[in-house]
Length: 274
Image (cartoon, rainbow, N blue to C red):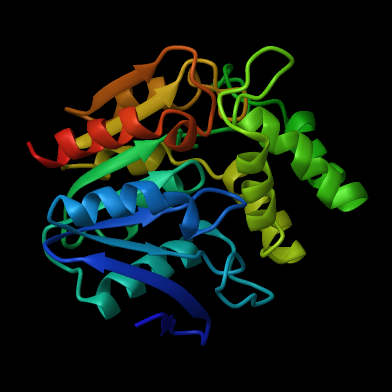
């Protein structure tokens, strides 16, 4: 089943590896389900069923003009669960923007069929800096994302992905080829989805969704995440989700599923084995 069709006719590309308890992996912006390959393979090898899909507008999924708000994106997630039959004993794991779909699914769909959750370098609960969210990202910084993309999309993402993966003058946790691979993924996405989703993840307030988490929840975040600051997101999510487990990766950048792949995969498998 490489594709499923949503209620509004959008085709979503789905990878379905292994068998066993389902673990649904929701990718970050502006990548695709391929960014989960290392974890999906390890999960399948460990006896789990790894399901990863390309968000509408990204990867190999179709690119409709609308539907990039979190309510619609979460309804897409519900369709993936339903049409793959992963409606019992499922674990939802969202990276970065994907954490928002996990949070909204827990409230909007009352966590149907979900027994555990993971928020990895996630935008939950709120990215935007406001008076009651002082550690968030200033509006002008969020606005500069869209401005940079519209001015020079390809140059913007070369710079963005180096920060995303912690590549600096001295620090280089991944090869140049890995940066190029991530950049190539961004080129599969449509311009409209890229811009609309940046608006959504930067301005959607998930604080009201946190009480809906009533399952074991793993929160993993790098302390040097310059893309999604830990003080506004990971640490606040841990405070707001009862019984959650926060694991901080000292010095890790945003893309820790890639830069700290082995450690993260082991932590995820350990959590799933509880």
